[in-house]
Image 1: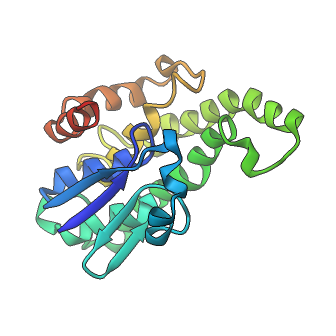
Image 2: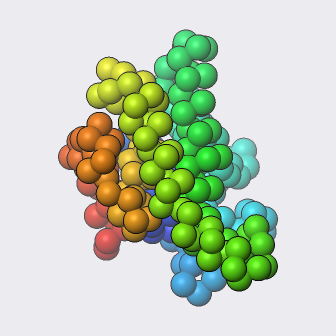
Length: 206
């Protein structure tokens, strides 16, 4: 059985939703950031990066959201969570997920974890101040160019939709009005209606 290590409010939500959508047999284990559990010896032995998500499989541990999403989609092909038989379309999915991971998530982190990049207090405050602008720019690109509609890749739902839903859920807290992005907001609302999303959110609130 698969085991997902997650933390509420983090990007691990995307992997959690993907596992639920896939109908996978899995256990979800919460990592409590409020007591720095991600830096505990036990968790670091599992994932030396000290971050979530981490997915324990019978062959080892997988980290990084795009990798976990691809693994889930490929492991449960009957769920049709990715165009696994079309190299070009699968690359499109990977490109979108990589953008969320390498650009959007980093822009978000600048507002909360500037200490990763500098020890200069003024620089950290400058990053915080800039973050709403950079997040808005990221979502402008998603709105106008990357989100094909109604789902990320077009007509077919995929694991990329769970990842976009996760990131779009951060907009208000990041000082960005989601109403500026009607396609993204519509996507977020439709995602919230999916049974798998509801099941995961109920678990997080329980």
